[in-house]
Length: 118
Image (tube, rainbow, N blue to C red):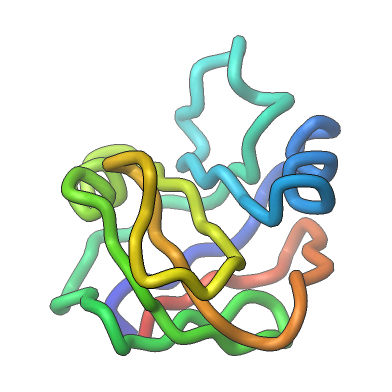
């Protein structure tokens, strides 16, 4: 595993983002309070390998393939466990902190589920 975390909190607004925008904002458990309602918070981990286009992300019981990575996404993932996952399968991202992925559907996440970059 290059990065593996466990979901500790799911903000109410984060579920709306997931359904309406097909996106999930991740942040480690040190998320600033004012953002807590918008993010999926998780335990801390260190990135221990190269995360790149073509790599696999496992979220709960869903598997995704990385199709694009924003210019700042890996830096913020390393520093704060922060990035925005997009479930749109596009080969480009609009914002530097985004990671686009392809796969079947949008995951149903619960506290205790894992997110793994393999």
